[in-house]
Image 1 (cartoon, rainbow, N blue to C red):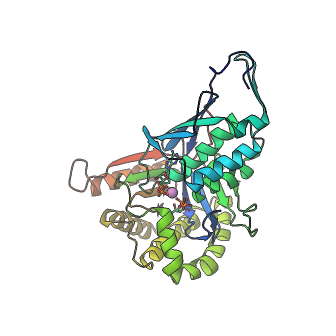
Image 2: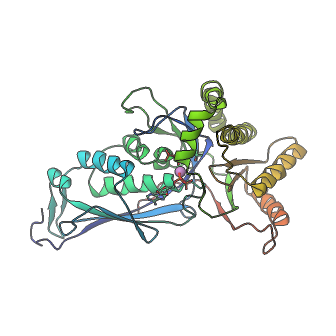
Image 3: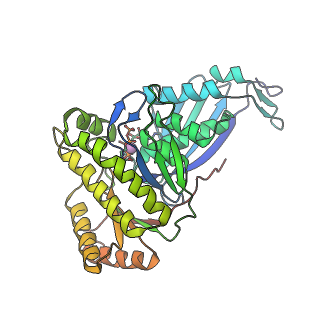
Length: 362
Ligand code: ADP
Ligand code: DP6
Ligand code: CO
């Protein structure tokens, strides 16, 4: 394994991956372990300077177990999702050589070598801001680099998908679509880029962090309950989303903001409606989230055409997408008026960003 330096060597790679926010939501699996969805979904990838995961992965013959630390605390890697990703990556690893350090790892060594993984999210974890998307995409991307996995981003997306469904879309900047696929083994359930980060660069995304607390119902268990109990979900997946996905692709291609906004808001609202249609009902949004929706709806109606789109993932935090910088400034003004700092209705924070590309800091 190591040519000259005995067992003392350590090889590391660090990568940074932004989160992505779905504008047509994934909610519901047809296969739990492979993580195969019941509908296509579309997302926008955020700027990694604002909401992102940074993960360092290391390999050394001195390591005796695979271990991982998330936000400073050790977490178990024994779960199926991590194990599936690690297995997929190990089976695709190639030879690695670092002449300067005198390290030579052959393809078959990867089965025996153990890994250490350290990951940080610079935004609330498990609070409905898609930490699992940035986290698992970053894990797969950094390990693929370390292990010299020679696959394109779509192939890697099928591995990230097995860590967390939404993660497959975070391997692309700009707009991405997760194609649900037809194959039983999930080989065609992959993400593709619809448009790169430059395509619609006047959009501004403002995230109003209503609460950074961990949610009570994880996305995984919430959508499992919805699949088991909601009748509305079948209608959504079969009748509504396929049409919306086509319309959303068209809106993105034409940079048609009014259509984009109408579709994104409607899809967010229907996703929360299926949560309510679940037994027991799931409430991801709270009064503050509802107040933000009312503010945007009134504003859009007053202008006659949408100025701002809102979308809420599995949590109370608002993702607000404005047409351009001018409307973003007006939106911030309105939010600060509605939720004055240091008042009872204060929001936790704001994050302003735009779309960007996957950044490899390794
Ligand atoms: P969210 O809305 O934040 O995506 P989920 O319930 O979908 O919430 O997923 C949260 C879980 O994702 C965490 O409990 C953790 O297991 C996993 N996760 C979050 N960040 C990371 C990370 N950086 N690396 C690995 N796993 C992560
Ligand atoms: C509401 O990808 O977190 O954010 O696949 O079980 O890990 P698992 O769930 P996850 O679900 C995301 C749901 C969503 C919508 C979306 O991102 O499309
Ligand atoms: Co998630």
